[in-house]
Amino acid sequence: MTTVFDLSLLAYEPPGWGKLLLVGFMRSIQLAAGGYLLGILIGIAGAAGKLYGNKVVRDLFEIYTVVIRAVPELVLMLLFYYVGTDLLSRASTAMGFGSVDIDGLTAGILVIGLVQGGYATEVFRGAILAVPRGQTEAAHAFGMSPAQVLRRVTLPAMTPHALPGMANLWMIATKDTALLAVIGFSELTLVTRQAAGATQHYIMFFLAAGVLYLALTLISNVALRRFERYARRGLVSTR
Amino acid sequence: MANVPAIEIRDLHKQFGSLKVLKGISLTACQGDIVAIIGGSGSGKSTLLRCINLLERPTSGEIAIQGEPYRMKDARHGGLEIADRRQVQRIRAHLGMVFQNFNLWPHRTVLENVIEVPIHVLGMKRDEAIHRAEELLNRVGLGSKKDIYPAVMSGGQQQRAAIARVLAVDPLAMLFDEPTSALDPELVGEVLSVIRDLAAEHRTMLLVTHEMAFARDVATHVVFLREGIIEEQGPPDQIFGDPRSPHLKQFISSVA
Ligand SMILES: Nc1ncnc2c1ncn2[C@@H]1O[C@H](COP(=O)(O)OP(=O)(O)O)[C@@H](O)[C@H]1O
Ligand SMILES: [Mg+2]
Image (cartoon, rainbow over all chains, first blue to last red; front, top):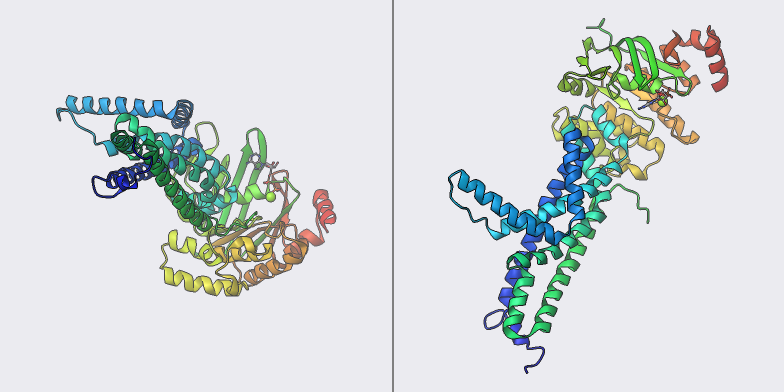
């Protein structure tokens, strides 16, 4: 029986596992950031589609958000991952490119982004509705194009309303990366499990992973608060 | 050029669902005209003004700005719709609207509000836009407030900033929709005095207002709207001094 904590196992260079953990951590951050950004893009498109689109567009986004929010994330991820990669390689075989190997990071980002996009659509839709109509009306009255109104008025004016919800989604994105361990993506949780399994130091490695996730959250909080202060410029504080 | 009316409205109808709000309005404003539009609440004053820059789509009728009619087409479910969005945007950029609730953009400072349209719609150079905006803000008495956000200003200051925002596009005509109705009584005067200055420069304007004394003072023409039609119109002294229609008489005595 070894001691519970053998900190030398966390050393950066082998035989320490530090480097592997950090690489996994970086991959987790890449996944979360990529998926989150993709989710923002889908969310803006989804909110605009739901609010301003025709019946077909509205219905499509409605189905999308209902499905995303109703089905457990893990199931969605497995579904998107296996169905998505399967469809992709079939399509590429059919087109004569031979089978493709979609790289894990791209697949992971797509999967997380699709899930995030469902929630982000609803966050942005609510936030856009919270912008007083007069502000966009003034922009139209001055001859801005619909795209300009969206970019120069609607999006910046809705940002403060979207921030609390979007901050939550970022936290969820960072933690959802762990679900990708199931499909063999070597992010922080998976490498932690490997390290723990190989060394039998379960408690120490999972604590270390927990600390890394916590650090990410704390640093994110600082950044988000700073961004919120910027986005709320011009709004009279209600607190 | 001088003979082309700035705003010409012919037989304008507007209905919301089955509610007929405008029932055949014809109105012409020439360069330098200051047309005051008065009438009771719900008589269609705002709707009329908002049809002029197509914030509301007319059900039928024609509107021409500086001799150029809006290109409209029949909508599938009745009424009209915009046939040429670019034309509408181009014309709108030269019609400055001042709203009852100011509608400044809250995420932009006062100066940023004023330079927004010149830069992003009219394509003016930033330096020039800033230079002009500073002049205009000085003119409406907000030179020292240019870097603050609208929400921390009084209503009167916000409305003066909104007027500067309109002046920055050097509008063909200005549309005022009850510019002082949302203001505390003690702030009305500062906004009216800015509008009075603009009137003295013979800027073309359509002014919906409940400030009868002011309307009588600055308008070149007064239009009394009732239930979607122009019930009476004429020079201010006639409208206020010698009203014919009993409704107008009653309206004037009720707001005086
Ligand atoms: N978007 C709208 N939808 C339905 N009814 C409207 C709309 N806008 C205005 N109305 C109705 O049209 C009538 C005229 O309104 P409005 O032009 O705002 O009057 P005013 O400015 O003279 O008070 C009112 O009965 C009002 O309820
Ligand atoms: Mg009104």
